[in-house]
Length: 276
Length: 351
Image (cartoon, rainbow over all chains, first blue to last red; front, side, top):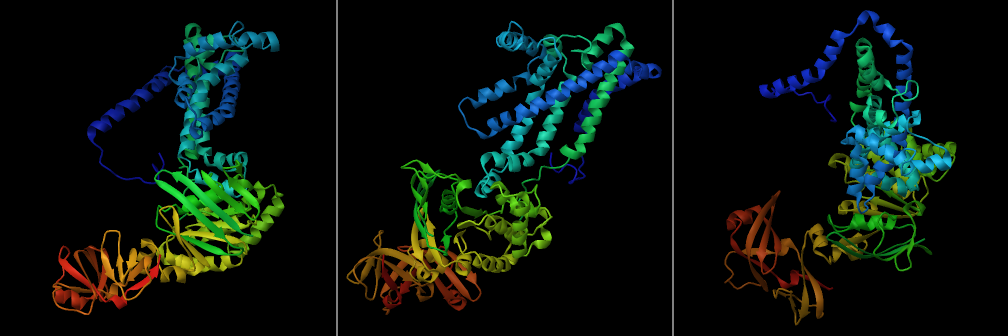
């Protein structure tokens, strides 16, 4: 994914590949076209600025940004551990920490409930000792979103850490830098593109999170009803509004992905290119 | 200030058992073929690879001693390294690179930048302070790496193949610059290289590392005058024969015999210079050459008006003959041949 834009070669592609790729593009584009086709354009603005919609949108933004921040805070050290430290059972730990990538989110939500719920394994002590209740709260939404989103950041950052030339760490150490200073000043800047990409992926996943949220945090307007939940609810009561909200959600994600692509994904991580 | 090191380490197929001492203000070149363990030895000194056994000490300070569990982390050693690819941090400016070591040692930012700027001026990179390392040429990168390494005022500077990453065209001018800049540093320096030209141009003394062992140390002149390893003999371009002298004959491990003029008995080396070897197809004629070895030609290499003929047989030899001789003898690889040498043309010295 490095030089895709720099090295533009004109090659004649085999027709079957082109056809199949075209079908794939259509497969992703058609649902969007479907939404655009059915969107009630005249009343769209009204639906969007509706109090409930705005509340859900704001909650979605706040929760997904929190989930992204937590993913970065815990995910980067986790990725570092998985990439750099050779300990027994690393494969198992990696599988465990990325399980929620493949787990149905509802299952994740149920599992979270039994761990962090008021009667849960850890949750009962949180409740009893610290008076902290997570389920059916905004904090619970953040926990559910972090649970499903963090693996995206972990695998992206871990891959980047693995590719990193460790000799730069050596150079840093011989210059008098401690391991921690080296991590902050040499390693982190070198993985910044991957970190940004991972954070965007995690954020997008958190923004779209539905299953774990509704299972663990419920669907209370104002506290736990995020945009995806509002879309689902509106589908039963007011399909037109559901379409508008869905389009808004798509627009936000799409804008961020396209906007950041050029800044982060497009540029190859050349931080450690050899100057020869 | 002296550095003394006895390094023992097994790493993959490498079995490193090397002893090294560097005197105050000295530049020692560590010369050896690829895979000899040069870089690993350097990493041991820098603290990037802990010893399995042995001792590294700088003056009275023990840096690594597995026997007592003493190990000083690389960042706490007064040792700097210039790495082979220079390893400048691409996300920092050249100035920040040079200031990095000082900042890591908690120097105030302004001081660090001032000292870094002085170093950049000294190596002639003052105009590049705010550039990214990517904008530098190979030679400039090397100077920046040197400035970065010296800015922390180390007592020992390690240079790992500092010229290997450069193309041949720029290497000699960069070598000249490096020589000049290294001369201004009065600490100890160890230069790792596989190029004897670097050792010749830069070093006070050389240590030959081959197969994980230091096989010879001394000035380059001493080392090349009396090679004690195949590697050095190849560098100098002579045939080295190791064996035991008894009664005017040196016998090798494979029982080949070399008649020599006069030498004390005991384990010895004999040097057979390629141009003292004469090649003959038929060795029945009486000759003044006391040595005649049978062999097969494995390779013929023309160098200008000279031809180097590689022969494998009783002894593996390289003979140097003229193009005219080659034509007269009609030599081809695979031909059987006799190599003859006069005993007086062979130099012998004790092992």
